[in-house]
Image (cartoon, rainbow, N blue to C red; front, side, top):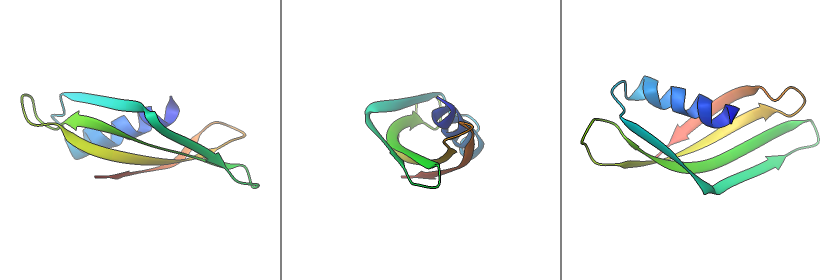
Length: 77
């Protein structure tokens, strides 16, 4: 939830008038390394403007597995 919330915040910064953000739960991929860094990757769609066409995006979050805090989020298209 923290990752997708961070990704939504980044999308709102990129597109201040975004009207809809939907995360596709079927694309979520979680991995963790030996150092305690977890990564959550996935995809979704957003409407950058009200009534505009939907745009696909991907997200990649780095998460501290011990604290659950998101340390970074990257968006792609």
